[in-house]
Image (cartoon, rainbow, N blue to C red; front, side, top):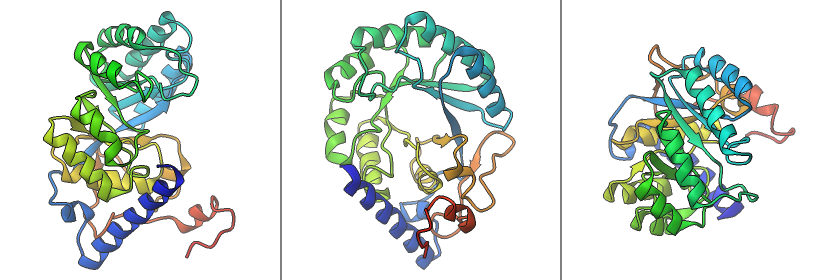
Length: 286
């Protein structure tokens, strides 16, 4: 884990990109074939007090997104009334025809809530047709996650803080989650994430990658989404220059709020070198 695995992840992603360019194939095809040529991104943003969150969601929806995840902020850190007010405002803003997910962010080192809170929160979320409840419990609460997944009326998601497939094994074997969310920039790159996705697929657990990182991580997630039949969503970190600004030409949503999965060789990603240089502290890029 830690910085070493992060570094390995970057190297592995780069090698897949090089292999694709050398063979003239998109990475998704090298992973075994493409099930789709576009995928729905969900706009990922931090929670705020209800009025501010409502305005933020409306502005993001105006960009063309049709799926949203709200996370962290005051949720689970004040009281049940605040939690419900936040979710109610979010549902009102995005409308009944859009997907809405909630991330409690219980990997926070100062998280104090346990199973009983998570179960009660899941019942409240079900009233607002929340698609999944993410990180509802601390990342070492495996047994509580098993109980929560069994009794929650909404799907339970998690796994972003885990690294390498060995860490995922007990979570998958015990069916502690409905949706597993490895992060390609943390687990060892595309090679390791594919192994984790295979393990999940064998157990009937959905694989939807975590993507709170950069445009390179998003490009890798798009290729992975093309190669796994059940991966119908990818995370899109909104308002980040490391996604929107450094991508040459930017990412464009279609009329239905989907992203085209690049079919050019490798990751199909081109960087805006001048924009990248703004964030490298003068370090040479090539």
